Image (cartoon, rainbow, N blue to C red):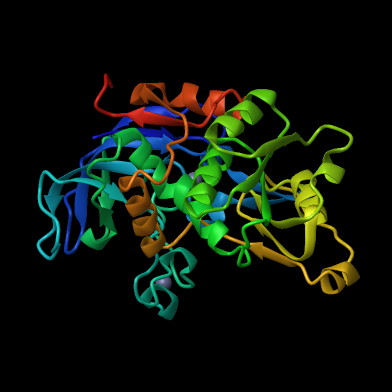
Length: 350
Ligand SMILES: [Zn+2]
Ligand SMILES: [Zn+2]
């Protein structure tokens, strides 16, 4: 198989020819057709997350040690099955749920692999991922049928859509007049607008520093937009019932928390980096919630796929590029040049 691997953090990925793995036990070998390029791939590529105050979390400490294959938005075709892999057939086109836990702890058994407490096996994070012609999946239960959904858009459901879906599930119950701010209108932000619309939220305020992304937010269904560099941005954002932070920087956190009305909730799922310093009494006095959300569960991904199949989820812009342009895709994403999502296509030239 051909993989595009991190050989040294921060250096270009290298095209590597490796032995194609043979699935054992319940494992399934999937021939990758599409792999989405996610913002968190940039952090894994760099080798760390910025914790603010000069502190860093190094990805090698959670098992991401080069040579390593990125990619946690895989879709493809079932190519081979282990002897105990039940419920999948060779030739099926499937989306792969990548947020796989140990499968044994109480949290995994309750269906929350994404919050596994004893040994995560996240594809493209601490297990070989989808920037490769083949990916090994531990069990057929992590495969989802996406028939009828555009292949490239379908792959982005595995991280960007399920991440925002899970974050939006953590908002308080919303009335018809309630407003929700989406902080950041990149790949996550645009699909967040689609998910909010699909859930019946009408008053969506798209926030970004880039006018092109704000224009895309309006096309995606935001009712209004705010350029957060404007001096009156904080004032314009007052009274939100919810704020979903798809960036996760000190600036967006301050804006999002400051925008909440009493009883409102700020949900952070962006991983840009930095630290939060906030006075404590107003958190109690305003009865606000500050909640983290990380990717989503297998059940949530199935719900997102069902919404997309029913055409209730307006696709965000997706640009498909041949897989051998993976480095260029990461560079463009890092430079902020990507509108929506880039998806690598492994059916085009290698
Ligand atoms: Zn991601
Ligand atoms: Zn577990």
